[in-house]
Image 1 (cartoon, rainbow, N blue to C red):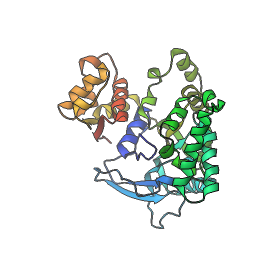
Image 2: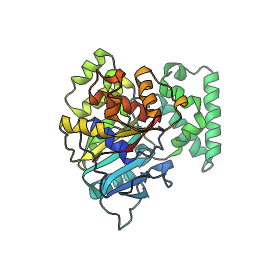
Image 3: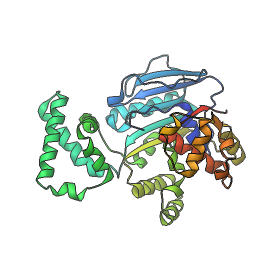
Image 4: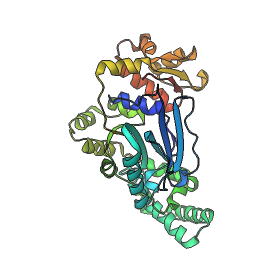
Length: 340
């Protein structure tokens, strides 16, 4: 999923329920607003296939239409950190004014500490932008040439900051760093974003990266113990970001979040039906996930049916749903219906 990804209502609901929170009902009329941030301010490919949804689009930071109805879901696609501080305040004001109680907001942004190593590159591009005016291609060409010169000269910065985020940026420097020309570009800590959105009565509940719902898959036992010891949500997410060196977050917030009973959570997840999104031969996965893909190759399946596969019979519904989430994250599967 890239920064321009626009999550559909089904995906956001699935993430909320994995976290034990009540979803937005999709079996009746609902309103969905996509706000484009910075470079992503064009018209998005709005989520389709949901006859009960009314979909709206606007540019983040701009004054919304006067007749904009109350929203059940608001999605900021692109990066919240591409907006300047005034525009971010306007987004918070819009959420406070337009999002219904129980409504969901998705906010993606360049995150710290993972982006800390690339801040000098961002400044380099920004200085080139100031020198070369509005010619973006010239800005990036000069910045790319200067980066190559610095690397060839053995600049200690590159050796001292050999991180995954750095390698990703350097692998496709010009297209990836186009975002650095945004005047308001800023990498943000989760704690600062969460506190800003608290002014709109929003509470962080989950990541739209579904694999985050199962820390046992990506943290060591010692790391998991340390994470579980964090009782304060903001501190818990900050500790997680330090462990993962998170460079981009896909946060989901809810206004007036309500916890689900575990039995309702299991029933809701079990009723979700998944379908293959790619030909089976193009999907590669480890053994338990491969069995799920094989089942989906025969047609859409409810998560409850996937839970009855031999490879899954020692797992509860939440564990199977988390595995299904890996297929959704990878793009190998999609949700083709969803319960209320």
